[in-house]
Length: 88
Image (cartoon, rainbow, N blue to C red; front, top):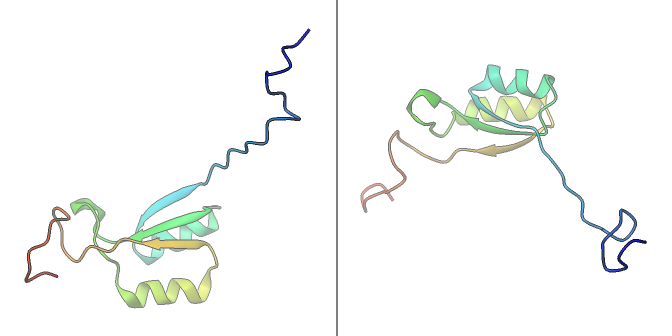
């Protein structure tokens, strides 16, 4: 007999949702990622330096063509995420 305190599929109401998120470098990769079934896209550019904020025009063009959810890298320069007073 099963222990009554042991959760069963009927009593266990936990759902695990896995999203297919792709970090992309620019508009062409974003469009391709959406076509390939990404659930969400992290839109960046210059990934070779860790990623920076993409061009607004590229993001705008993407959003007029696709409906895949997007998060945008907000980083105005390569390097760390520590900014001095002049950068803020």
